[in-house]
Image 1: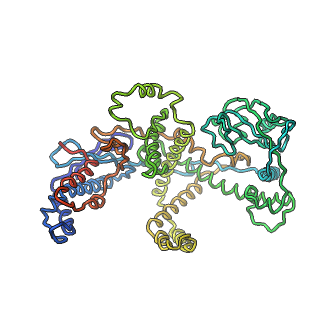
Image 2 (image 1 turned 90 degrees about the vertical axis):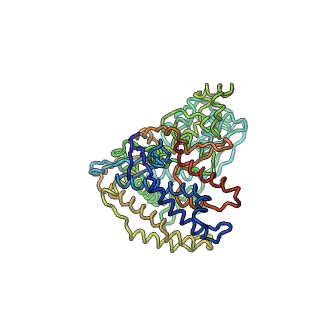
Length: 589
């Protein structure tokens, strides 16, 4: 097969491929005969319509189908011939006319090649949690305090004291109104947060508790952003700087007695997960049981932290740049965009590139549809004023949306980086799936068929359990488990002492929040000249359509071949099918 390519980016190649007349004619002839053998046209018995009639009625659709099949086959052949793995294949479009009837171009983003070296050179920090009896007792006391039944104190002389729950009110940006426990007053000018003056977690917490002790409803106090973020368990960016707060309510309650009712509470139950026949009559009886449960939780979390750190260490060592279109696909998959929620789909498409490129996220990115071309050429006074101040704070995306979508991009980068190194490790170390484990998982799922809520769908469930898709999912899981085990077995593990409180307060994926800073993302490339973007393609009514950038398969095009109801519809039907082809190609002139 004849083809040429130019490297137009770190990972992107643009191939130019001619389609010969002989290849086109031969495939058109084969498909025309195939359609003729099953077509049921008016005036002819099924499969007896002359080939000439089939060509007249379905010629354009058949040619489209053939071209799409040839394009797909050519892409597979080129990649196989060059030993490349494609992460993304763009929409083909027709190039300048040549001697061939069709010469098309297509962009392919290839996956980077990674060579995994000596894993023993990797050093992974394993948290070693220090768990004292005092810490266990503090956790018991804290869990017990969460089970207090509160009631409001009323009266002019009421003052807060240790053990009370004090509600304070202070100005807060609306983007952080979802902090657990907060309340928004009717005037919507400030927010209220409960603070229990019991068991301060650290010196900052103790300082805030001291400020709140001895106050009455309506009293003012000065609080710092650091104190608030520490007490509420949020980042300092989510709280205001030093501000004036007001006491708006004081609650009191008694610590619940240690008994069956308390031990059954979900707020307390996590401390006694371990099975024990010992009777619990005092805090001293509960400490060894709570310690066992806490140690099990520490062990589970430690394994997750170590595995995550191992993959991050490997990825940062071998991955320097992320293919942009591969990342875009993973981002959109995670965002679960689709026809069910066009607004979310549009938002995800529009925000991806600005986030990756570190640009300001303006609210105009969230417009329901792209602006009209006429409006772009001659914007109104209102639009001019809006665009002129687009970079102003009042037009930026709300902090909550910026944080959410940036986090989604960071997580997508993490998934791509992990996938690249995991695949390289599996291939270069010749890791094979544990077929015995896979079989056990399939059997376990099959044995659980009686747990399917709708038993009328039991057979459907079993078809999935024994199906190819489920099998491949388990194979992938097995490969990843073995790759991670190999990595941990060969890498150097170093313990680091960590306090219990900080161990559970830190995220197991802190690095993921900084993925944009850890990896370069390949720059975006301009669309080819004359190419209509597959993301925002204007329809006849001027609205925006979301179009898949992958070429139609031959079966999809073949499925669109239907018999016209009368002669008048022959031309319109052919035009419709030609339209399908025009979405894939730009015709030679």
